[in-house]
Structures are given as C-alpha cells and as structure tokens.
Image 1 (cartoon, rainbow, N blue to C red):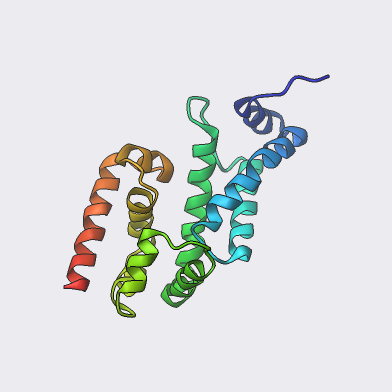
Image 2: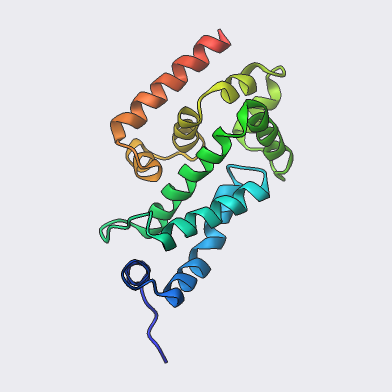
Length: 180
C-alpha cells in the first residue's frame, strides 16, 4: 500500500515532474473545499466553477509558484480569491449587485451583516458596498465579515499587512462619505 503524500510533496511533484497522479490527488483534496469557500463569496455557480478550474489550471501549467514554507490551503485560497476578483471585476457593478442580492436570498439564516442590509433602505449601504472596488471589498470581507486579523487577511489576499490596513481605511472612508 502506498504512503499518503503531503500536500507540499504533491505540489512539488506537480511542479517538478508534471505528475498527473499528484495533480489529481491535490484536486480531489482541495477542489471541493475551494468551491465551498468561493461560493460564500459568489452566488453564481458557473463563475465559481470556472474560477476553481482556472486556479488548478494555473497550478498545472506552473503559473502559480508554491513555496514550501507556506500553507497549501492559504496559497490555493489566495490564487482562487484573486481569480474570483478578476472574474467579478469584468462583470461590472450591476452584475456584482445581482450576485450580492442572490447570495442574500440563497442563505438559510441571515447573518448579522445581512440583517443590517435588510434594515437599511434600498440602495444606501448595499449600493455603497457595491461601489467599492473589488480590492477594497475583498479587504472588508476578509477583516469584517470573515473576522480575520490584518496579518491573516494579508496572507489570504497575498498582499502586505500595510496594504490591508490602507485598503480598510480607504473602504471605511468611502463608505462614510457615501452614507453621510
């Protein structure tokens, strides 16, 4: 019976030898998890499926470089979340609003953020959030909704902690201005 390889060993085998078996094992381990995480951010299953495929295709083609000193799940999440932001950026504000509303409709239990949005007159807070750039919205989602620290958000988004702080400050300022 063969020994189960670690995630890092699988990624090294994919990178060094284009080991299809290692790639398939990595896909089986992480594709369902990545899909579930991305569906929490995007209500369109077609977009999510495309992003998951693009993420793993980037790994197979060697466009995504893995360093052995970092967590595989965080590394995959960073690639997938960046590709999702790119996909949403191309869809325009109307498409993002449609996705945000669809996400709100498809959850069984409303989160605290959803209850706040439901209590605000149509367009105020929801509209202000939609008008944030995808980069600012991603930082707010990571730090406010997901409850990550600045350092954790930086790792997740693949940006320096100082950039997380700056984007969070810019997002809050823009929201204050629009809601005043």
